[in-house]
Image 1 (cartoon, rainbow, N blue to C red):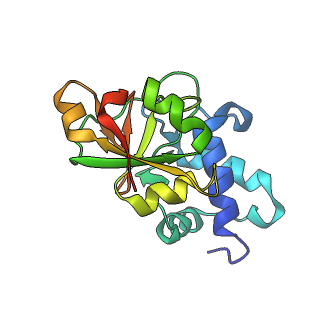
Image 2 (cartoon, helix red, strand yellow):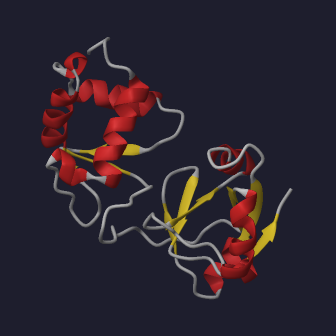
Length: 185
């Protein structure tokens, strides 16, 4: 275990490599977003002097300590669980969502969302939170006072909207029509 590894910095670089620009790291993702762990470790070791001795144990520790589950390791492969902006759609497991999910954003985007629905924009999927607190935390990245939306996820699902599991706090959808949204409190 390398005590010189900052978990936050490692998570940021790993997320960039597995979610946004794997080609900059010469990584190949399969259709579910998996990359060989050995290849990922190799490129991470080249990123920073303090990561020269980076090991699987360091990455596992970072994943376990994270406040949000962003990555997963399965055998000899690793992937980011959500937030992808890479070209081509990663396949996800379809699932029945809870009755209500949440999304928050800047006041500037709220009117367009109420009119056009929730779209993935630069990401592959719309990200939805299982609780208000998580949604507000995400929304605060865009605005000091974000607008909260409650999504009638089960009703949307029953009408044909496809939902996917992300992790224990995040659900994904291709698109959520405006008729299933209401401004929350």
